[in-house]
Image (tube, rainbow, N blue to C red; front, side, top):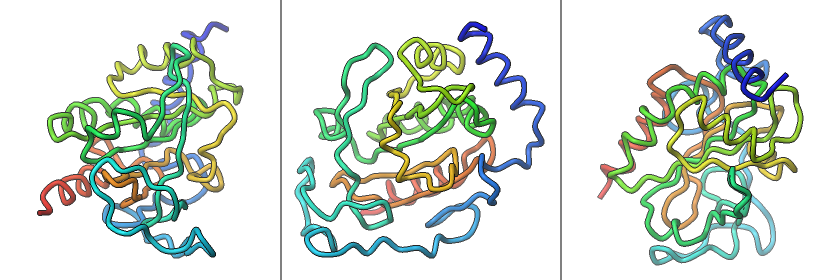
Length: 221
């Protein structure tokens, strides 16, 4: 089956699924700050040199410690290929021009990920572009549970009309951010590299959890 037909089939199956489906695991949608669901009680406090938060970093300074997966920790340095096979560095030049970064992690087999991708451009990417919000979606697997390649990535972007930065993670380095295959997984990272919001699952076409948190963050002095 061609990549296009695979994506069309996956999309059709997603649309047939009950709208109440929130995520690709067996849990309800979870937001670890504002938004839908219940708080995540597991805190990543860290130990040794990785414990605590960096001192106040000037804008565009790249963190060198205090990495982790929970709110208050710094997002790990990450370089992945885009659909054209060009390496994209999370802390590269674009990082210096962003107020916040939304990281959305998805898989082709995940119906709720498909549903989120259908609205990502209008609800987040273009809605917050003027506010300096960068949106990165990361594909970890295809609809047949295989490793995504550039062709699959490009077809995914075309199918859903995505205008965000699209990357592939065939080795699943980002698996630390979606325990138990809780997809889609979303994070918001601020201009110092700190994770300020986490969310699992698809909460509806308005992506209310993400938009509410972005509005709150952007309104803060």
